[in-house]
Image: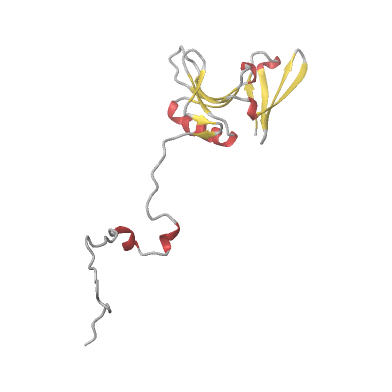
Length: 167
């Protein structure tokens, strides 16, 4: 995917962004010289939701690929309302395998969900009954009824030679 974005530090106030499967390529001209930077996605901190105009009345929001060097951060998507950007935020996070970040008022980034590497940590969920290996082998009635109970005092036959009487 290739697109052009604004870059105030570059000649012509623009740069070209190329998204490849394992890395992003940034191309721009600086002082008449062409510059090319190829950066792996693992070098980025994550995908953040940021306000386009934090102090203004405009409530535009953007999904930004955040790098420690602000010049290497890339805006992937922008929308006029917050509702429009959440699906894109999740999409890009899943596609690139990067954590979802939230930008606070000071401009710092924090994880939106607790993670362990690329894995999002959540509460453990109970297993649903009837989803195991025996689901198609046993009738559902056997799963529902209570287990049998042995008698409190089973009969004991002492001193008898046979358990069954012959008449």
